[in-house]
Image 1 (cartoon, one colour):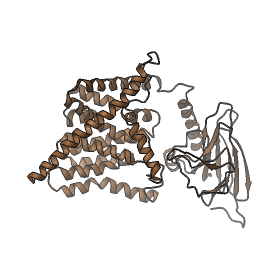
Image 2 (tube, helix red, strand yellow):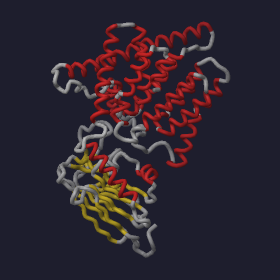
Image 3 (tube, rainbow, N blue to C red):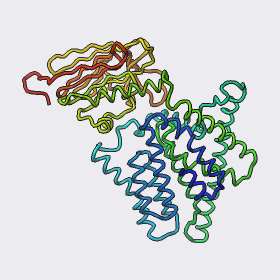
Length: 473
């Protein structure tokens, strides 16, 4: 909807062109392919909606409303952090009164977000999405991948539009979008850049304020969102959701400006591919098939949530060792708050599980004084890893990894990974691990899959008295 309003109201495109922009945005991989499956990923489109509404409020010079909407966007998803900066820059380059004061007000969402981050999390780093620019080769490799796969942001990556019935159609769609989208982007960059720089030059020669039209402001926001995506050291397309919301309207405006039949045919092809794949996702994959991996994930999440929400009242910590994806992409503190769990949730270690229904996670445990020893062995179709955490090479010494004062690991099969991909694990942790854990009180350990039906099992550890007497704290 916001893409439609940007196209129709801000860029003054016709009804058909505006609807095309809305459809292409809705079915773009950055928007649909992730948010359709998981509520957490759905926060990206929601934040982008508030961000886009903030832009429209700014264009209408409703500055207070813009600040409020950008605040909501940033609190919905932190990847909206670039928008207040773009809003401040927009205010500074537009004619108007008290531009400096208004521009400073546009930065209030960032100030509030920083205050909350430091108050509750002690800073802005330490997450899987925190920028990591060293080694530089890794960052450049991710950036190169984004450039060579740029068309994946805007047009579906699944080109099986003929179901393999027409031999040449699918490869032609794949190659066509890989060529057309970058050329379209290059044309937009050249045309918009020449227009904006021309206005800046004219303003300097005539010694007047810069007077950019609304279309140029949309271009600046599209460029800002795209720049933020490339600045991140993560390749995930969903972080470009807001950029895509601005990109398709301005790209279509560029096509309409040139009045080129070839460009319009390319745009129509992108629309057909997006419609075909988008409707395929909606009609056949949502809800997913009963035996699909996505449906199995949903069932695993349901079982895990059920286990976490029905803990004994005396449990102070929950240690989870799961071979599913139900916790690997989740911040335990966020999950704890979302489910209303009083006990602290601790992910012991993650598992890359690519096994059949009959495989199990073999595990034993032993309690000695204040120490719980958890030994786990995986089948050959799986391996241990720390999802979202890139270990420094000096953290693993003699097969022992110290995580904190209360958790350490013995990893007898761990070895460095050669020729690894950027931001991948430095170590292959192997298939055997012994976790040495000192709970801070009564604790529950949840393991999945380990039961006879492949579901989860658990055991409880009572209050442990450390050597010397007195309860643990």
